[in-house]
Image: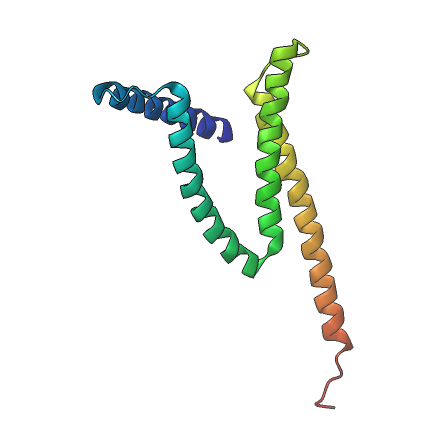
Amino acid sequence: MFEMLLQELTLIMAQVHDSLMRLNDGFELRLGDKDLHFIIMALAGMVLFFVVHAVFRRLAKWSITAVSFIYVFTVMTVLGFAVEIGQRISGTGEMDFGDVVAGLYGVLAFFAVYTAYRLLVMAVHALMKKCRKPNPKK
């Protein structure tokens, strides 16, 4: 499922790229590829910043762990692609999208174990706190 989502996003980005190139040519703007990358990435980056900033502020009020997870998952996604691209360039391995997906599943699986452990510890602490409380009705 994750692989299909990334492939679909790649196709959407390719269509957006083609549309922007047609607009550039149609309006005879004569913007080069680097100019278009500068403008589009700047605009997309600012929109993404404001959306992410709003989401992270809300998440931070609830749980800083959620913010940390999103950050780590994002970094691991970029790192996974970097490793695969590095393998392609250096010839040390086969560039395989499935490897990126497998690595991200590993991050999710280990984080799930960590989350289950944290929930168990929190439940035990809450139970111990409840048991230590003196019963005022005696």
